[in-house]
Picture 1 (cartoon, one colour):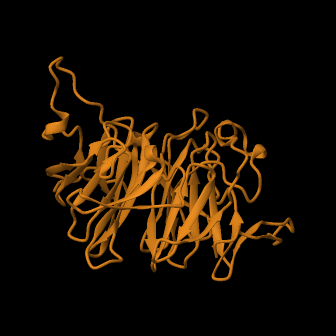
Picture 2: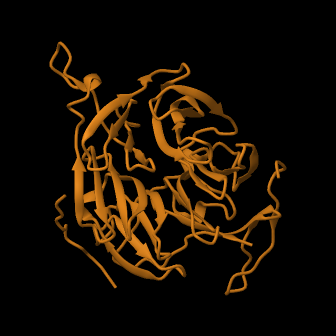
Length: 343
């Protein structure tokens, strides 16, 4: 494996959730949603971004093994910095930024500890690439168009199918599953070194078929690891074996974007203005911050002062941190990261 460095910029219950009163440092109230062990304080616009960075669509968020939070965004046209990866400490203080090459295409972000080191896996929809880097952006490998895959061979007219990877997952053995969510709706499989192995599934609506497989997770809660796909175009979550065979569907979703699991609980950012938690049996715990007005696509292009406290607009990425808090990144033109602090 070879590495090279891109330029680095700046551095340094099923019932409806309750909305309760809380106060921040300024004395203003913060919304609190949920009940019991699944109660969270909603802290919108979390993270102190430098003046030179203006968020574009905040597509993904992850935490590393040292508790640092990585926010991935497309970069606003008004931003002085082109850095698409912004790193904060646990208190929201800016640490560093990098990744100008992902401007406009930053979409899916996965983190995995391998040995003693954390690695980031990036899905870039603009350049149609998957890139594995270390935490400073040094490249381990890159994957471009899956030209070895039979479904992506040129047709009689010489044209190739569209390819635009949206997210990925990594199995315990290091096998990489890439969801072509904005392209031709296949799942492409690679070995730990980024070498192509095979292609799974076909486009469609039937069991085992996918439409806009926007997110993907390897679920290790059972006896054997399986794939949990955010089959967004079909308004469902679908379980597949690691060989792509249909197993079952999961309900209680509208437009699921991705998923993550912690201590048996699955977290789902849903583009239809809510964040969902499912228990170990995939039964609904609660929907958080749900806006039922149906105005999310109009609202997402407006300024922050139009956003309603305690309500989400278009959740696109989400992750648990090591304490059980939840970070939510949204598909809104000015970007927004919300910390759901576990109460």
